[in-house]
Length: 582
Ligand SMILES: CC(=O)SCCNC(=O)CCNC(=O)[C@H](O)C(C)(C)COP(=O)(O)OP(=O)(O)OC[C@H]1O[C@@H](n2cnc3c(N)ncnc32)[C@H](O)[C@@H]1OP(=O)(O)O
Image 1 (cartoon, rainbow, N blue to C red):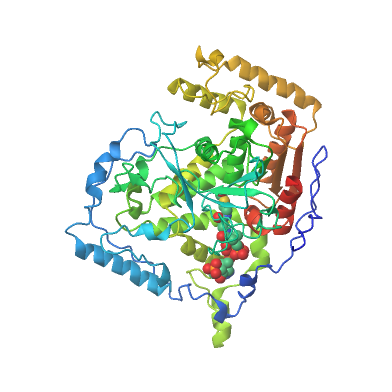
Image 2: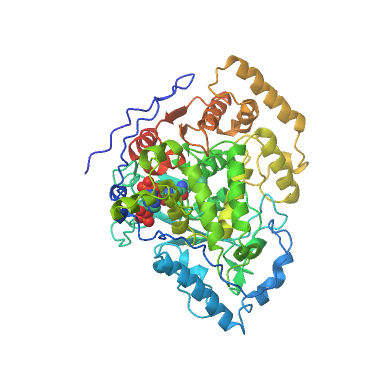
């Protein structure tokens, strides 16, 4: 058995106040082998990059199509007329369609991206081929509809795609549920479902973290990862058939607005099917960290440990603004067509630009200083040809070509509507007591017969899977005074507590997280993260402690990888998880 990776040396277990690790110690050059090949000779510029002069991509002319009523919240079925007519929107317009596809193909050939070109057969939705779930994905079918927090209409019976690694032990006590970030599939690692016989060896997005003897050791744990509700890799989402079972067309923006709590309630349905009463741990990064906290809130008795990496207890407005900018550029691509693009050409340009903005929030300026400096493509071309360098308007700084490449690589591999819905769900995430109470109030009033959405002050026995306690049946009103009183109580406590966080929201977040007070928690943040800044990590860790949780482990990492550190830093992030789980 290979030796276990050592525990990170640069990490500090947080005493009170939190100890901050010394600033960036990340080794550079970048340790990833495939980057090593990205030297600065012009010859190493990826062939996928357009060569100068850079001509603006021609927008394929789409045939006019009936515009569905825009209905992003999914309330009612205003866009429903689309369902019968949309697949026919290309009908009788074969030439126009061919021309549009030809133009797209020409453009893709120009930039050497022919392998990504839409492979759709005549009459088949082209976008579909690009985001199929991994072949070994398992599907959980819910037994009933899912009542949603922001919609008066429940989601009809849904499905959740998932993969597993390792073996569930006889008392079903070794299960770890991994929650993904925004755009990932359930494919965390290769050889899922049955390690010994699985031949599906494509590396997953946490390949170095999950496996036999790795940080999340599949010799010891039974690991489950789902594609999130609203995603596009096998779980029900905006690209799923609508009406369900009909298969004629897609939900598109008729899909109801989702909350992170809806996603985790959908996961509970899978845990029920697998017969797992209590998880050994709920682990997630970024949006996955939000899910991890949500699950622990909704079902504290079912979560043995909670891990939140580069996430937050309440979405900060810096992140909300950046995600809004991404959605704005995407939605202004005419091909987005108010979300009804499944029978036509997908919003390639909008997705590409949105991903460029996203990438800026995933990494960091200091990383790019080290990785690219102020070097330019024109410099390389000129030096190769013995000419004087002339800067270009088109992407020239290597950071520009990098962002261009990231956008290009992503834009047809993920569903634009899934991106919009999940990014909005991240924005809406707020675990402060007033926010949770108002969600509970709305949900419990709309669904008086269902198990309740718990109030922050409820004991663990009040949860989203047990019958509504009789005491709650009389009134679904939230006692606003009680919420305020709890916040005041936390405020008074915070005078005696020495927090590292300067957040004015600490007392209300602590009041919201009271249900997690008995669950050992790992909170990990990264100093160079601009999306979920380290202040939000301190806020979360401090709020948990203020709520009475005496088992909070807090790590703050240096390094330049920003938000994506959770995908890259196997030693420190992986080591912290391993130490916490054992
Ligand atoms: C919000 C949430 O909930 S979660 C968000 C999480 N983050 C993400 O989704 C981002 C996902 N990131 C990735 O997928 C990354 O590829 C990682 C983290 C897996 C690996 O990162 P790195 O090893 O640093 O590679 P990175 O992707 O940055 O760069 C490598 C690619 O860029 C290309 N590249 C590097 N420099 C340049 C450049 N100057 N110009 C053009 N292309 C470049 C390389 O050729 C390579 O291309 P390829 O992947 O097509 O072979």
